[in-house]
Image (cartoon, rainbow, N blue to C red; front, side, top):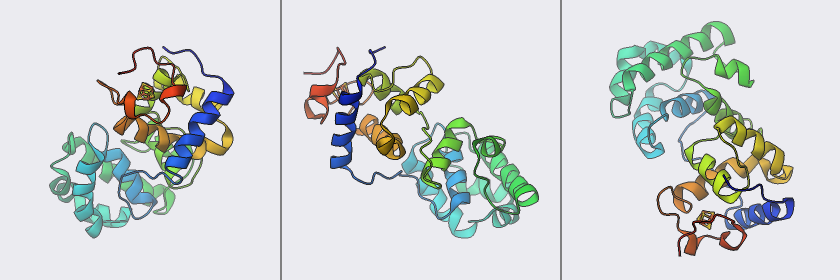
Length: 214
Ligand code: SF4
């Protein structure tokens, strides 16, 4: 685990991320809060591109909990067959749609606890929804953020919750809303798992990772 970076270096890193990509966006397609919840729930152990391919047709016929219920579990299953764990995910989409209709008047609640109480929605999904839809600076830590946080020393931690807390504690608040997407994109395209692209990395001189690639 890398040592914790100091305030000025973290600020310099995020300044560069912001200059390179002032308004970073998530890559999961959605048209409202409900379709965002469904898309994020479907994305567990699947790629965003694979989810988008399936949800384009699904959301064209069902972009509200009511319409999703009308489509039914079989209908949802047909649309998401290409996504891993599709049977279980289809069940959860129907269950969460029913809860949204029966308990929340068809609206998506916006507290972490209420979101996490929905079937198939964990802490990470709840944080993505809070960040992307309500623009609350919640930090959803996935495998990319976990790696980048630890390699760079921005947010060292032994598990995802520790890294989530470390990001909240260490990243200056003016960068906190977008920290999630900057770190995901950095991990997905530059600081990749097996052979990070250090020679092309825009924070190479600020990164203390001892196994940088030449
Ligand atoms: S220098 Fe290498 S290890 Fe450090 S952040 Fe960049 S890509 Fe990752």
